Image 1: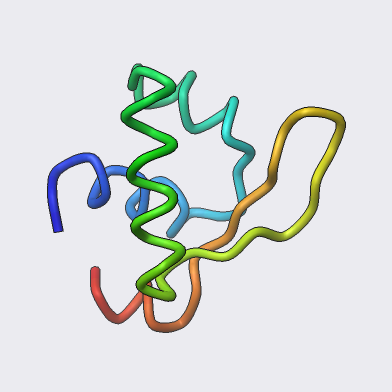
Image 2: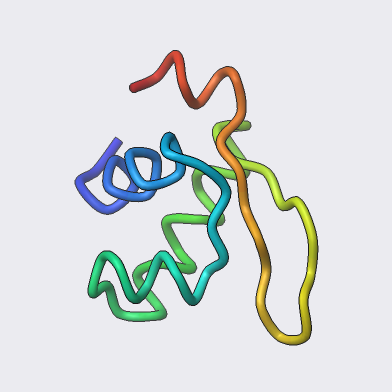
Length: 68
């Protein structure tokens, strides 16, 4: 797991956040964040909760909490 993925998991461990919120809190570039989210989702560590307009709300899974 790289620093970007660890940052995302840490933020989501506090509660569900949208992609835009994660970008705002972390200062990550959109491309880096989307790559990390895809990787985390493929590993089963985060999951999409709801689509609101053009934004996605994500949550950490139990497996993601164990990884932290």
